[in-house]
Length: 272
Image 1 (cartoon, rainbow, N blue to C red):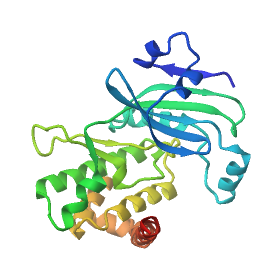
Image 2: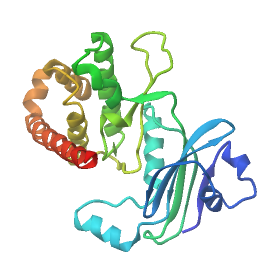
Image 3: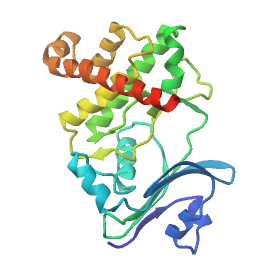
């Protein structure tokens, strides 16, 4: 496979005359994740922050293990770039990619990278909403956030994108002052596991919704709040949703609770 690169400012100027695959490996900064075959770091250029995700291939063993458990492996940066392009095209705020590259025909050893602008100042919705149970927010703000999350989720799935890691922590609320309480900016991040198809299969749509539901179970939302989300997501009367989507609602209750319990077990192990 011939090398494919798309490089914009400031990296086009910074890497002029260099091999971009060698240049991205030489970036220095705070490393956020270092796994076999993947590295994520934050770097700065001309006083601005950027996140670089570098994929070096996961090996045939890891590919086989994922397929054995019916999981499609993440082979490189291509899916994240495509997901960013699709979300941007349908008006869903997300990251902006400023550099992308891919080379190598062997999927187990493919070398790829993507660099995105840092979204700052921001706070993720999990942290922002955590105090709500003890300190309820203004109803206007809460309803506006629910409506925005539902709209972004609906448009994402409508664009044929499913996230596969769809929790409140992967929504970033921009904290710069807004002209009104409901004129906030909200962005979806962490799309490296996203899948892109002509249409989102119901199974993967439901997995995203269950993950999102599980991450909202402990922030003090009421039944009416969940109903508001459903109305805004499906764009249909609530009575019709409760009738037509009964299997989905049962799945959300069951799977959402399972995911929450798994999260608590993982947190308990991490804390010990």
